[in-house]
Image (cartoon, rainbow, N blue to C red; front, side, top):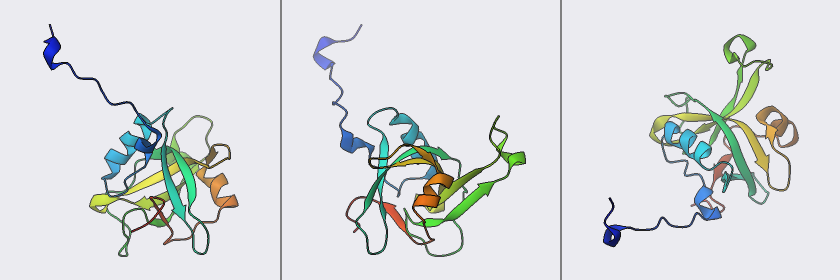
Length: 146
């Protein structure tokens, strides 16, 4: 039995707890995104040159590479896109998938395959990229980058 004098309550989950910390390792971020579903949802902000930061919910991530692509990228930086061919995807009903490759802590990357811009519906990375072109070097992170 538990000693009633040692019992503590867990803190109430707040929306702010869903902000992704891109300095964490890839496996941590993948688990974090899953843990934040369905609420408060994992989110970040996309920083595009000459525009306000756009809040984006990260719905699904897939395993990334252990090594980062060439170049000195800081955590949260878009390293490009990745297309997984049908033969490798092995997901019933899915031809292939496109993912946004994002640099994370400890030199790894995370592939984001589903995301949702603020006020819009959830979409695949391929659909997102058609409406919001992303180029290598753009960053995901907190609303105000340091």
